[in-house]
Length: 193
Image (cartoon, rainbow, N blue to C red; front, side, top):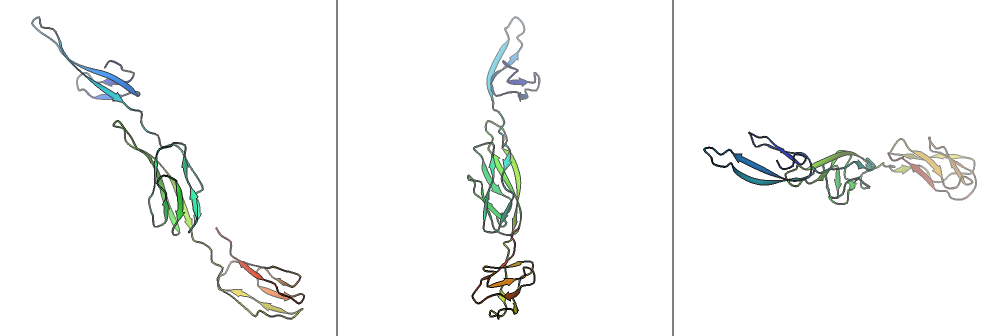
């Protein structure tokens, strides 16, 4: 090798090992005999730096139907999802859309050149189903000082009143107490995760 800092070559097998990016000339020599000079042949080899996929970042939790975005410290790569039924991702943008509850592995690939393999980095994303507040029921008229109760087909939520000077509601039981004449909107909230 003309430059062992770029590429080395095994003198007997011809196996070349890339050391650093650059170009080196490889020389093959057959020793001359009987007064004849050596015979040589040369061939250049170009060593390419291996690609780097970088470090991935971005929020790893997303709700069904919503989006989150992954990014890499390295530009020029493409994104893919291990399960498009759970989460899709824009190949160039890194924008992930939740499709169904579950987990998918997101892969960022930077293509290798000059004989180098592709470089990849992975990061998981968990898709959560959107919460459901259910269907509300209960008597919608109450006398001042008396009570009525609202309920939902979905458990685990909390109740609130838009106007507690008209009607209050117990946040866990749904029991409404009439305070003064008027109308209040009762809201049942199931927290998203």
